[in-house]
Each structure stands twice: as C-alpha cells, then as structure tokens.
Amino acid sequence: MTDSKILVLGATGYIGSATVKTLAQQKAKVTAGVRDPSKAQDLLNAGAQVIKADMGQSQSELATILANYDHLYVVTPGHIDRTNLTLNAIRAAKQANIKYILVVSIPAADNLEILFGRQFNPIEKELKSSQLTYGLLRLPMFIDNVWGNAEAIKTHDTFYGPIDGSKKFITVAVQDAALAAAQILQNPKNHVNKTYTITSDLNTSDEQALSYTQSLGRKIKYVSGGYEGTKQALLKFMPEWQVDGVLELYKLVESQDQSQVTYTNDFKQITGQEPTTHIKWMQQFSKAF
Image 1 (tube, rainbow, N blue to C red):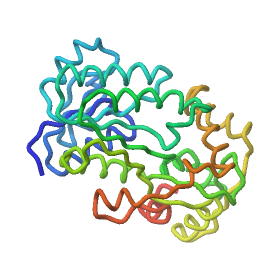
Image 2: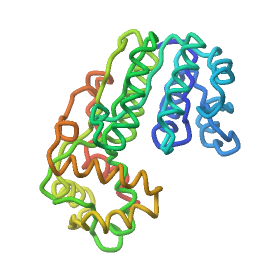
Image 3: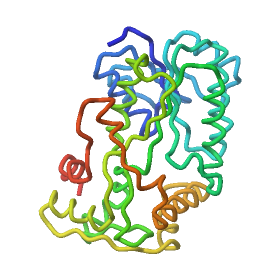
C-alpha cells in the first residue's frame, strides 16, 4: 500500500462516500473534497480528513487545492451540468500535475443517442487526451437502487421496474465499486490508462426476485410498472432529466444492448475478491426489508 495522499472529489454521494470510508478503513491518507464540510460528519467519523473542494470552483482555485495531493478520484456528479463540472476537475488536475486521476463513467459512454452517453463521452475524451496518467471506472446501474423499493418489499413483498422481468442486465454493488476504486487509488501503477467496467451481477429482475426470496425467507416478486409508472415513482427521488436518462438505460436493457449485458471479471481482477451478488447484498441488508 502507498503513503500517497488521496483526494476524493464528490465525496458525499453514494459512490464517493463509500470509497472514502473504504480508504479510511484501509488506513489510507484520504481526504474528502465536499461542497459543504458541515454535512460530512460521517466521513470525519470514519477517519477521513474533510475539506471544502468541489468541481464548481474555478479551475485555478481547484488546481491550487489539488496540488497538495498525489492521487485524485473524480466522482462525476449527479448534476445536469456534470460534463462541464467534470471537465473543469480534469483540467484543474492537469494544472496541478496530479500523478494519477481516476474518473467515474458508465458502460454506455460511447452511445451518443442517449443523454448519459452525451454527458460522459466528452469526459472520457478529455481524460484520454489530457496526458494525465488516468483510470476510468465505468459503473452500471446499482444493486443498491433496490433501497428505493424497500417500503414496497417490506409491505407488499414486491419490487417494481419499467421492463419485462426476463431481460438480463449488469448491476454493481456500491461497496464493490468503492473497494475497486480504493484498490486502484492506492496502487495506481497497476492501473495506468486502463478502462474498467465494474460488475457485481448479471441477471434478470425475475432472478433478482428469486435472490431476494431466498435471502429474506419469504416470496418476493417483481412487477413491471411500465415506463410511465416508473417515471412517476422515480421523480420522488431524482430530477426529471436524470429519470429520463435512467429510463433510456432500461430501454438499452430491453434491446439487450452490449453495454448493459456484458459481465466482466474486472472487480475480481482488481480486488482478488468475489463480487457482491444480489443474493449476498440482500443477506447483508435483510433487516431493512
């Protein structure tokens, strides 16, 4: 393991905070860069340092902060202007001569017909042409999204989605994405200019229901609520542009697009561990369901 100083930008979301906590647990020198340090008490409690640093700062201001660190993790924000914010962070990293930069992307980043593809494609291009030593971490939909269905599973033994239950697709557990990122950030020399797609499981919604049934010891079923029903449900959790982007990913699942059905061994290759499948995930969090 390295003594390098690691900064995680975008450290309060799902992925950022899980990665910071994993790095802190592994006794790495990790700092969480956040917009509002007063809202990051859990990261301090986990043993990380916390500073005010975010992708919305001017390039030179951000570069001054980044110059104090060796390795940078840019967790692309869930913001409508995510492309420009992330490009700003990459340019600031170049200005600061960061030794290694890891950036979050998606498996469908090459698909310019979908919103997320149009957002992530310029990010990947900028990174590859930046002359920085980099890594790209492409993450599919999260297994953890089932938290949005926790109430329905608890009360009706049912969870919902927009598509037919027989379509396979890849998913990643947030803890797996965090562990892979932590490993890369501490040993970047093994991950120079690499693009990884971190997958934890490949299955259908009906197969996920079987996994949950097995983990919880009672019958759980999957019901397709169609696209409109799913959109209305998701609007309670996220802005409309993001909901539309997620539904486009489901349409790729429906057409069995390669970006949504290609399982990789990247997680095991990076960490040496077996991934967290849906069944393992639900066993871990069964008390909440």
